[in-house]
Length: 202
Length: 275
Image (tube, rainbow over all chains, first blue to last red; front, side, top):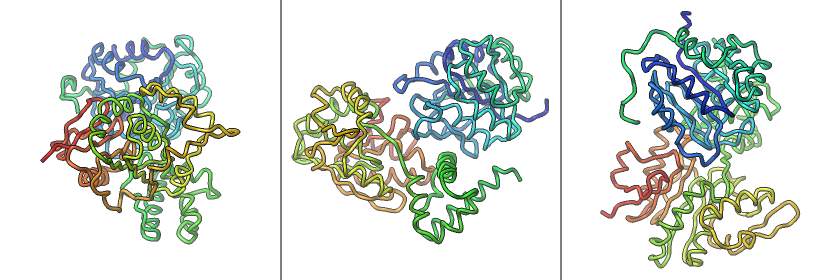
């Protein structure tokens, strides 16, 4: 699997808190790729989810701040009411532009901007959700040569988002949540030298 | 070369051309967002590619104006981030009230919703007639709309909800007149707001401000332009003045931050120190 992947992007909606806890909870602290996540969330949700996941996962989890440097082995969650985008040069950007696919943050916005920067070196993951956000973005990831992973609709709390993604593009892997961490580790290049957890918050 | 990279080259050339012909410099805007906005504009235009648009764009000011409108539109709402406006009402207004007259610069006001929100808040704080809000934006089309003070009636339910969450206790419906599908804001809110064009990339400061608001505008800028804006705001503000940024914008890790104290931590309300 010498694809030289540089990042993982994940889109998730209904049922996401459990799904993210399960998936991220099974990844080791030395997982070598950065993980960027859009979880649909209300505009005034606060940053409790990032804190919760950070406490329960070996990886460092934080809410994305504008101009955060994208570091390996770190998980970035889109903040409530902002789109999360990837800038060239390995930085994150935020936008308060109108809702896309009825969502802000929108999975499509993250996936499309990440695909433009990482091209074939990107892994896109669509998890449980009761809408169709992410399907267009996953298609873009595939068009640029990246890999598409979708949670098995039968395993998902809400199946619409996985189904929409599978209808939009030829997905590489369809599997239950439980096997996903192992797959990501198989795809990711060697481990990082150190854990990024405990580093000072940027 | 990947198609993406071709498009990146096209965008670079287009922004270069726009700068040379029309003087607007968007090369200092963060690439990911401006690319999204440009692509949106292109999809709505008659052109198939940016290269195709380029020829007309450089010769036809009308085409440029449509591009300008397309890439500089920011969206907002009345009492956006109610917790922020509640904090202004409860923690900032008491300071402002101690001045005989207060000047406020709202940079990047878009269609004016937050400027009108501030006017409501100050009027309710008993400051009617004792303030002026200079609300500026690069986009003259949105400014004109802001000056009219007419909103879509379907938005008012959400705005009313925001207003109440921001600590508003009056009847929000008293601030506008409903006519068909529109809500016309009352003249009392408009009279102390001056809407004016201002380009944060090239224009100068507004002197002796007691408060500067610039929320969710600099997130679209590259670091150098962001830095320019902050310097501009700093030199506009009186000591003891307030700087209000978007909820995901911070003075942390900035040299200028030393001269400011954060009044309320997650809400990005900073106060300039004396001396």
